Length: 296
Image 1 (cartoon, helix red, strand yellow):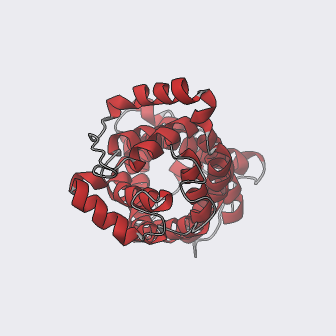
Image 2 (cartoon, rainbow, N blue to C red):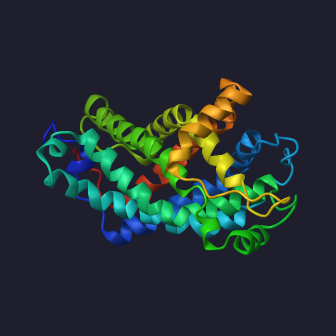
């Protein structure tokens, strides 16, 4: 059994590069396709034009093509980076070594940054397709071509800084909480054995739902930024920097009310709570497939 002062997630041998890569890709594709309709509804609720004018309940799988291209490499990159950083970070500092929570937070944050380099372009295309930015009923390919034509390569990274400003707090809550829940479940309930994929999924659901609720205001701002498009309806807007995040958040609260910052929190929390169970449950199953479940 591992040292009781060390998190089981840190104590166990990290998965191989290939296993983490494939497991992350499988879990990423599964959760994005299953939960895409809820994400569409959330995006349309948060749009400045309102839910109905952005498409309502019609075409909830519109834009799914862009997700298919980004989910597998994005999730695979995240978990390869995350699993690589977890054993390395404690070696860099005694403070990090003494704090499993800090280790998980830093590892997840680093992994999220790398993953966003892949995911943000697909998020831009997906959001604009879902909300009908270039016309209702248009495909992901049409949105991608219009983005490239009107904004160039920079358009695909519109809101990158703001996305990072949303994702890092989310990840810094989700993964330390997820790992802590698994650790306590193992110690207090399971007699030291590793949680099963189903049990890991429950931990992922709680962690994901909690992080989703707390970071909804950041998600509203991120969605608004990604829905902005240069050259649409005669409008030309500059690409925002992360420094514009606080003013945008305050502007929404001032002009639309504080409640506007939590628009879409129900579908977002439900989607990510369920998604956390699917995403982390499938990942846990795949990454530990064929391994004996010995006590930690």
